[in-house]
Image (cartoon, rainbow, N blue to C red; front, side, top):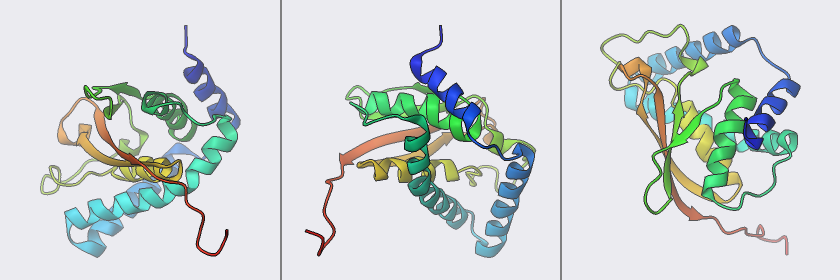
Length: 186
């Protein structure tokens, strides 16, 4: 039997407008190729992909909350489950798994058995072990969670482009962000 969040993920995926997956994947590939050319440094490209993802995540969280109807999560486990089963389904059409919780339950891994951003991608050997091609995902998670007052570190650990069987993204909770009133808006 499917979990409540898996059903919600399927429901929201079916009701959102879709972009042709191949066009999206090829466009993303073009962006990555241009960044590699512009920065001429793989590490800087990784940073820029994360920054780009962060800006996307800051904006996507509003759509996620509005379309999914999900309210405030009670803990990090519920947040992780919503990311895996609802958010990934809603925006990429896939379902992720959450595994490898730390003993203090402040770290977990998002496991992607499939990742549409990696379709049609082959990296040259010279950058295969240094480029996190889909690092945008780390930034999206970090940006979205920051908007709901969760400060996290997000990093790739595994990728099929590096010979692994799946993608693994590690999320580490740092702190809750205090909700502050902007200066002059008492």
